[in-house]
Structures are given as C-alpha cells and as structure tokens.
Image (cartoon, rainbow, N blue to C red):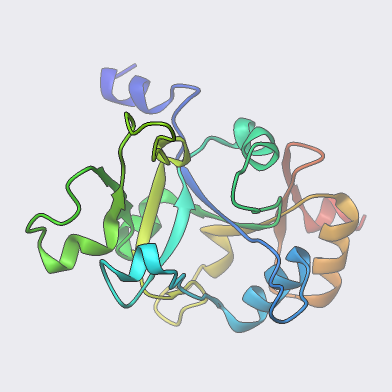
Length: 199
C-alpha cells in the first residue's frame, strides 16, 4: 500500500468529522429534540459564546476529529454536556465548505490574520493549578452557521448522516424525516440503513 494511504488508514485517523449536540435549557429541548430541529432547518447554528466571539463575532460550528470506534468514549467523557446525538460529515466535504482544524495557541492575541481567527483556541497546558487544554477534542471549525442541506450538492445524504443513541431513536427519525436513508447508532457501533430497520 502507498505509505500516504497507509497513514490515512490508521485506527486513530478518521475520514469523518462529528458534530455532537447538547440540551437547550433556554427552549427546554432535550438533546434528541435539538438534533431534530437541526435536521428540520438544515443547518447548525454557530456557537457564539464569549471565548469564541472574542476572536470572531460570527461564531463557529465545531466538529470532533475522532474515529467512529471512539465516539462512545468521546460521549461518555465529554466535559461540556454533549450527548450521543449529532451529525457526522465526510471530512473532505467539510474541507470543501471551509472547515479547518482548530489552532491551539498560547498566543491568541498575536497578529493572526482576520480570516483565521475563528480557528483560535486559547491553550495553556502548563497553567497551574488548572491547565487550559482542549486538545483532546481534536477540533475542526466552520466560521458562522453551517448549512448542510444545500442546493449546490446533489447527494445530500451521501456525505452526512445523523448519529443517535439507540435503534428506537433511528426509527423515530426515519418516520419523521423521509430524506434520511442511514443513521449511525451508538448502541450498535455502526451505521444502519432504512432497509435494515424496516424490512
């Protein structure tokens, strides 16, 4: 095998980027309802918390660069309340639409180009007594909201899939959203297609 392709096929490398949802206390939505709302509107709203907008007022949509076999562990150890509901995207397509790896830096106030500032994450691994270290997220970002149901891509369902906790959640989505043909189910650790759930 070509050495480059061999490197890309390591177990710790993924060709997918995962966006996970969390509850929305302001609207009373549990995480699964947040995912349903995202699927209904066709875009993921940008996060506009202060630690992001101080670098770029447009905010960002964040993704984890973590292989599927580690998603369960990612959810179970997540420190910011994200749960096993979200959307997985092909990395090559997200790159096409402007996603880039985050820049972990202890010099966020230096003269970074304005068009790269959305990627900055203040990092100080040696800060005592509490380090500032989010590198475990292997984060990628898109500036502003991310529209994934698009008129300029003909195969909408081919480059993204919903991710849910259980088979019953997948069945629920199949009933409510006719355009979805496959879903990654956490409890099974794999993708199921419509024909597997409804024989």
